[in-house]
Amino acid sequence: MRSLKKFNLDKILKEAYEKEIVLAGKSAGAFCMAKYYFKNDDIRDFKIDGFNDYIKVECLNFLDFIICPHYNLDGYNEKMEAMMRE
Image (tube, rainbow, N blue to C red):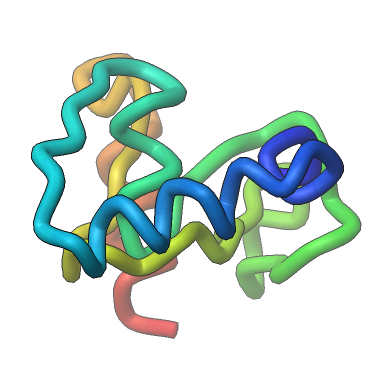
């Protein structure tokens, strides 16, 4: 998200979204359109009680969903569910 904002891509994408231009993406492309994404390598944003190594990062909020990469790996689903309750 910092990179998008650094290069004003967040504003460009928002303008495209408001003009109803079709946007698609996977991985980082999906992250940016979500409301939040869940990650574990940067704790400067929102910390989850009991899971200080995982955070909820605010995205562009075009679509009302939270994305969690590797949700199928051990421990991720419990941490993701804890974040959703916050």
